[in-house]
Image (cartoon, rainbow, N blue to C red):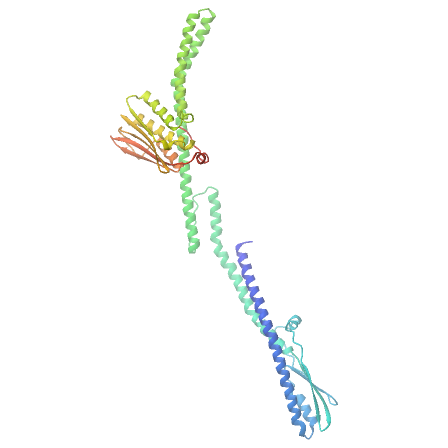
Length: 452
């Protein structure tokens, strides 16, 4: 059931309860009023008859006085007078016509007032002139109560009808913005984040509208950011594929070609029995396999830090530094990993390694430094990672490359933050603050990552 009809039903129930209570009160008062009126009418009529009988004691013709007495009650609303004896006479109340129809039988039974009867004997000088019978008739009084009751029902009926109509119209108008909001929420649920709600509303609904518009704005911004990140991830993936393809082509493919030639030569020499010469080609094959293994190991290290699972965070970072030390031995490398940074979970260790890997590679390739310092330390509930060099810095710090953007997004995904410090001619530094998480918590983080 809609809210509109619920409110109408609630108001209707309240009106019905009010009418029932008011009707019960009116019934009690009406019944008591009719009884009191009938009792008063009966007592007044009886007193009138008794007083008239006393006055007729000395009348010349008492029978005429008796007739006049009966006639005097004609037009009385509540009493029926009957003379019983030699002479018969009757004075009945005038039955009033009801403006709203006849009184229902259930209403008469609800009032429950029975007629009051009484008799007064009329005798003068030992002669019996009959008996005066008095009986109350509550019909006119009940009719009066019924008219008042029906009159009192008109106002509540009109008020109730107007109330229900106003509730129907007002609630319908008040709920219209909620229907608009529901439609807007469905559009946002379908991915149309540019949906906005306008117009003038009540203060309560105005706050709801403003909250919805702010939510939609943030969702639109988040959707745009997700699209941008997806594009960056796809770009990074393509770059990585190109790098791996280039390495395979430039580094591994020539050795495979040489191995193929040596293997063919060994096969040919063995067929003619020239074993000594074949041994030289076998040695050449072994010499070609060793650099291939080194290159493939290096490529695997780029896919996943070597030693991270086997030895831990420090060993994995030392392997990264050793990789660059072999290629750039003129640079001085310094590493400082505090004891509190171990055992923080696979996701945390992997994120730290990727940040160090990207920052270290950028420093070696682009910074031209004489010294690179890698510091990883625990500061309360956070892990601080800093990679600083004394090179020439970057020329456009406001436009970081994809690699720096990627590790910045990794830090944000972990609930941390990443900052750059650039001093042209004096070095470049990358600092990241990551919140500490346990191994179990890190395993439950619903994060999809793409390793560089």
